Image 1 (cartoon, rainbow, N blue to C red):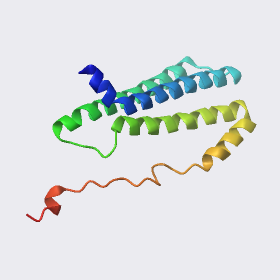
Image 2 (cartoon, helix red, strand yellow):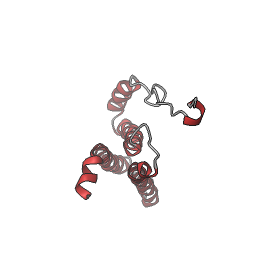
Image 3 (cartoon, rainbow, N blue to C red):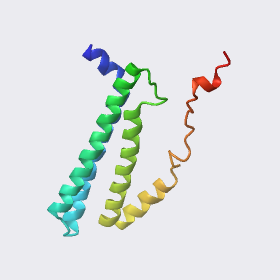
Length: 139
């Protein structure tokens, strides 16, 4: 049973692995920037870690929804955990680029220029509209 669930959740688990890697890298880059700029603050670090915990809880919430909602007859048009991971990963990428920009302005400008050309995934998405069956039934 557990192995079957792991196979079903493979896309969400892969997205979670990517998310964890970006969260870890953002922490490392943020620490490097703080050390370089002599701006390390334990209270800022605690606040940042609290935000990271919130991100991970959002991912876990997505996994729980992906597992439980279909059991209740609620089918979402996307894997919620994967969507949450994608959104949070994009936020992490932005944070990493911002920190690189402080550490090395030339690299920051270059990365910002590249990522400015990436289309907005939310604005440009074609979301599947879920229609209410009662309105469309002619029976």
